[in-house]
Image (tube, rainbow, N blue to C red; front, side, top):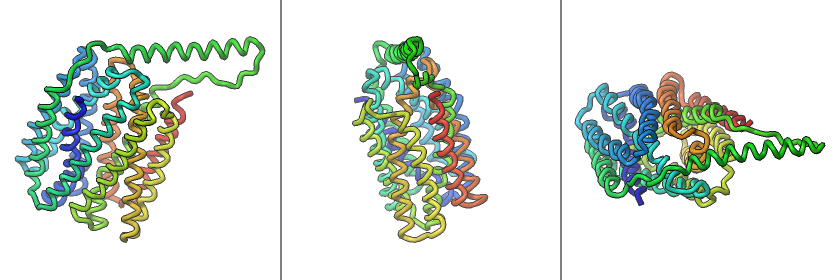
Length: 398
């Protein structure tokens, strides 16, 4: 039930996600690099706070308060954001938005994992992500409608602030801390016992003279995190300047750009729903590898839209984005479930810190490459990042 508060929160950021780079470049006279500095700077500043928010919520075992702080602070900051057109000041305010935005991420992940047993994690994360992705899509559609009516940029940002306030009110009423926090401890214990049991089984068969081909594999959290960093870097590098690619290179109007990204969101929604229905039957490790291969190949496919700007190549680009969204849906459910197993209790914020670090590097590099070179080069480098993530996720269980 408390997921509904996050639905409104995602509406606010769905609206901002495509609107913000267009607002800075088309209405304030900034360039692609300004967008990159704004988003990258915000993500860099948020990285240590991702860890700190996660540490404090687990240390106190209080999660609701950090969600409320996040939503209320973003309400105030987005309101301040709507009052200025100075790009430097916008960068500062957006950095503060990012700091408080990550305050709810680790508490939310812990609440889900502690509210449901391990066999239900995929389904629960899938339900949450499907609902919030729907909110994201509604926010994108709202941006399409408001842009179509010619609403001023400051007014659109103010709408995001109101949505964030509504999310705070709902969270205040609906979100509660769990009575007991022990599910992840049980999962960690099961993993240790299972690993020891496999080792004893292999040793026993070997001592009996049986030829044993099975290898005892231990999962490396550090290599897993490297794969997560590469994926986040490649994703942010690709998607941060992408609205400008569709608006500038392909000449689409602001309203049509929103429609393009709605298709991507629909793909993600389909991925969340499908993976949630599969539940624990989802082969998470195989999904991590497969989705990176798919997103790498689709990144290369976008080169056709950059070279031949026609209706057909636009259709190919939209299909590629939709498929990327679906792959992301599967990836996120799998990586959330695995991260709650691999990352030790008390360090849940590491997951969001790694995502933020990759996002920060990608935001700047993506906009820099697009402006200094071209979008074809950007698509090739992004694809390389996805392929490197594939290698890391293939190697982390050794």
